[in-house]
Image (cartoon, rainbow over all chains, first blue to last red; front, side, top):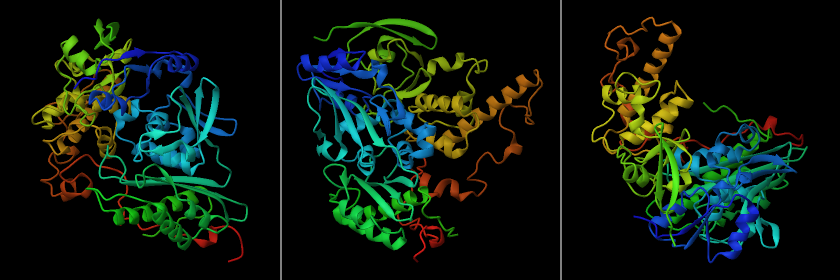
Amino acid sequence: MKSAPFEHHEPESVSEAVSLLESLDDPTILAGGQSLVPMLRFRLANPDVVVDINGIDSLEYLREEDGYLKLGALARHADVEDSDLIDERYGSFADTAPLVADPQIRNRGTVVGSVAQADPKGDWGSVLIAHDGEVVVEGPDGERAIPADEFFLLPYDTTLGEEELITEARVPTPADREGSAYHKLKRKTGDYAMAGVAARLRFDDDGRIESAGIGMTAVDITNARASEAEEALEGERPSPELFEEAGELAAEASNPESDEHGDASYKERMVDVLAQRALGDAAERAGAVKRRVTQ
Amino acid sequence: MSDEREITLTVNGTEHTIEVEPRRLLVHAIREDLGMTGTHIGCDTGNCGACTVLVDGEPIKSCLMFAAQADGSEILTVEGMEDLPDAGPELHPLQEGFKEEHGLQCGYCTPGMLMAGKALLEENPDPDEEEIREAISGNLCRCTGYQNIVKAIEYAADELDDAERVAADGGALAADTAGDGGPDPADGPLYEADAGDADTFCGREDCCGGPSTDETHPGEDPPAQFDTEHMGGDDE
């Protein structure tokens, strides 16, 4: 099926894009298009005006700067997947990228576009939450940073203003003793998550957990934080028992719906298991624990 | 409202200038405006990968990109494969592989599979089976069960590797004991299932369905055990 006709604008700078968003009537922003293009074709979205930001070269970046890992709005999933910086320092990002959709879609789709889409089954929102990340937006009144916790409102609904463009997603650079991971359950390549958990752990010099972040995918109306589990972890030393407790608390905090892939109690159990695995990997990557060879 | 605009696409080395509406998908521009129907439309939803083409060397699904977004790009479609520098006199080694290894039945997915295979071999000339399965994980095949597609891509990798060796040897014949241009029987049985390798067909990950997935399955891998000696601190 074809999209309804639309006007196609291709700004070459962020300021040009923002003036277009300001002056045009109800424009839709097109980045990687891997969700939006099918929505247009099935006429689930019928914008008269599309602002295509793919020509804004200044948004093509993935770098560390000013204490943040910054992903420009045109950083594709494949850019994250191929990045040495990500491999070395950002376990959760390295885990997540190859699990998004399939290779072709990862070549076009963007991390920021996935966050903007705000599908509760999207992976990146959970990663941003676990890292206390932010989305940086540019609008008529200038720039503002929205914490991930305050960004997601409902499925496909966020606090982004109608005249604002997300230019960047960012997370603080990790401390020396910090590690993160993402575990996702899905039936096959290309599927969205049935459940997913991102975890980040920072340890103090004494080996105790100084700060913990846990974000959950596909088990609530938005990507969600497991606050009680985080509180239970902080100040403690890592152990399988502690992570079991955190897994249970994350499962309790989740609110999944039964569907054809599994009932709610099964998904809660999966949150528990995935959280324990993600915490185990995060602790190992932080250098705080050493995995015992079990075979 | 929806004015046509002029775009230039270089498809298989030939430059084409066409007028398209902004809503024109790249796959429709290739098939209908340029008349190259080798690129298929399968699912219309971005799932099946039949419409995969290479845009500036990267595999993308041409049903998920507007033609106007490809303005100025170099595009490779299945029609261009036989003219690539590494192609044989008639076909590209990947195409040969699909023929030799029965990598297709109905053939609907094949153009997309060839493009995904081409992108893989460009980046990784000697992929293992897992890497091949990952590379074609965005392409659905409802006939073959994927096994012969994997073999077809392995065949092409071997052929291209042989060709490179021949070139390096200054034209001496590469090892091909059968003399048929096919894979050497000494490389192993052609039909792994016949050789009793039950895992090939009934291993959970590629059983009857899609390409293998690499995610873990709950219940399979118990949570990690820790060595408390390495946890830091000294009050235990």
